[in-house]
Amino acid sequence: MDQLPSHEPDAAPAPAAQGPFPSPGTDREWWRHAVVYQIYPRSFADSDGDGIGDLPGILSRVPYLADLGVDAVWLSPFYPSALADGGYDVDDHRNVDPRLGTLDDVDALVAALGEHGIRLVIDIVPNHSSNRHVWFQEALASPPGSAARDRYIFRDGKGVDGAEPPADWASGFGGLMWERVPDGQWYLHCHAAEQPDLNWDNPEVHDDFVSTLRFWADRGVAGFRIDVAHLLAKDLSDPLPSDAEMARMPPGVHPLIDRDEVHEIYARWRTVFDEYDPPLTAVGEAWVEPERRSRYASRTGLGQAFNFDLLTANWSAPEFREVIDRNLRQAAETGSSSTWVLSNHDVVRHATRYGLPQGTPGCSQEGKEWLRTHGASPVLDRELGVRRARAATLLLLALPGSTYLYQGEELGLHEVPDLPEDARQDPTYLRTGGADPGRDGCRVPLPWTASGPAFGFSDGGAHLPQPSWFGASSVESQEGDDDSTLALYRRALSTRRNVRAGEDLRWRAARDEVLHIERAGGWHCLTTFEATAELPPGRVLLSSAPLAHEERMVPPNTTVWTLERP
Ligand code: NOJ
Image (cartoon, rainbow, N blue to C red; front, side, top):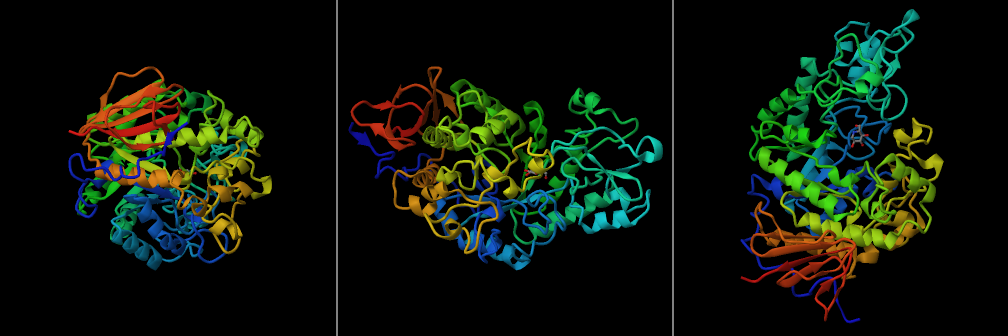
């Protein structure tokens, strides 16, 4: 069949429908429509051959990020850490892990990104520190009831000699949420035992975090991603409920999750953010009921909150439509802008999720378990997964709001589900004895070259082993191939930047298995799920899969962008 390439060579960038976005340096509200690229630094690029990615490695890849066309980089934790939880166990919130670089490297990265108009957003981890943090070491060396212990959440145990934990709360990371210290007291840790929870009722904790925010903002960081933003405020007044009672408690009443008081913390942070020009941005990682998310995204709070709804949605038109409608409505209500996310360092890569049998959401325990046992089986349709992933990305990039990309998705990279047991690092795997497959499979270091040591990630090895099939997905293998996923992302980002469409969105009549939206200026985006559909009006700007010339039909599992000329 005569086929059009997945783009028209002369079609991108499209003529601006309403003029290009303001240049990154002058747009105070840049975050509303930004494409933000997440870097998990230990797995991005390694400059010194120790197998762990580092800041100079990222610095060497700034031209790659500029070519990709992203507006900002979100850097996952790069702080000193024993890596009990991939860096989310922070020893010192105002320093750099020596294995990753120095504070000077952060400055150099801010400057190098800035030369390309790319902003740096960093991860802040305020719910907990590591157990090696100087505060926690002081707490351990100080007696019960001391000021040093009050920075964390220490309690006496129950039963004879306080040998039982204060409550039977189970951690989502496996095991209990309480750990006993040598003098008999217990401390709370919602995650791993190496991550003691801080006490946000203590003003010293507030003040210290404000200093941390200022420390990084003064170095040129543009904003923050707030780790587990919904957990900071807690009510640990006696009697503590049992785990079963707690599970039945609604938001706002639950002693640990999504308490209303948490917004007082963010209101104070907002006054700090607004002292800067342009104001600092923040996006909350808040795993809360969708209707409670908008409070985190309010103008007096963080300003933006992650919408994770597509992480658990199936590849289905009605499910996508519901998620899109709900999130656009919420964004309009709060004056925020939506965030679109298909992958991150905590979930199964979406190219893989979309290749699983329908109805197996890869992020669920069931889906992850399925992957672990069937990862190499032909039931996982790798090609279909990538095809749908490409279509999903073009759909999200056509929506009002900002889009968060996770490193490697621009290569159509798949999850590595079958890592050897002894290579696994994730505490969710280690603390559950393997019952939870963990998140290492989406954190395997990126392949830059088709062959060679660590596929160009490092001159040494890779801290998580890369499978042999990684080479075919490498940057080198895709460079120069117009139909590659990398080429599609580059074209999509540059086209999107040039087709300014405001916050509007109009649904066009569509069938069950097809979504068709129109943005101002005649920009159409049509996605087929398990059906074919007629091409929208206008000329084709971009298509996630080849289109048949003569038929003007869009095949299944495809997104196409067209532009109607005025
Ligand atoms: C959320 C982070 O995304 C995840 O990777 C981490 O394990 C937990 N928060 C604890 O910090």
